[in-house]
Image 1: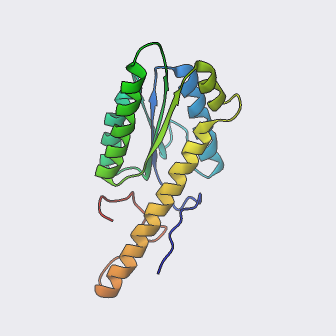
Image 2 (image 1 turned 90 degrees about the vertical axis):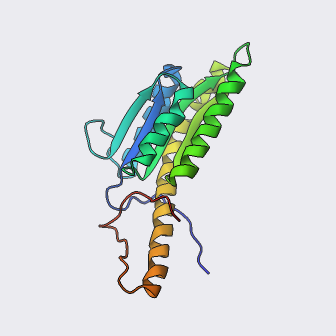
Length: 187
């Protein structure tokens, strides 16, 4: 039996996508800074003019799942990171947006087979959001770690599947660090 567990090690030069909501940008820009810092410290160049991370800014959190799904479906990325903040107000709008964003991101990940990290803060107050975006800790850092781990885990599962297939089909190609590519939809 095999045990699979992702690490934070970057193999090759994987590409990542980050989808960021402009609404509540006081929060989302701080999450983005934490995310970029984590990626940088783990060997990924987050420079928007570079080749490892692409950025997509959307109007609000509700629009994140559609763009995340499109980016994941392109097969260019090892993982997609979604950053947004939905803060409770006086109406039920919060409940609708939070629920739909959550469902949309989960559906996109399941349909594409690409890790899509749920980096949407859902808080009761602006103070709670600020605390999670840098005052006490920065969840953006954690979201980037999740993306690194999931990209690594999916790659490990693909390598294992390729090795098992190679035992059955001698002509199968084994994925190496040099030939790594984003995950496919089949496991």
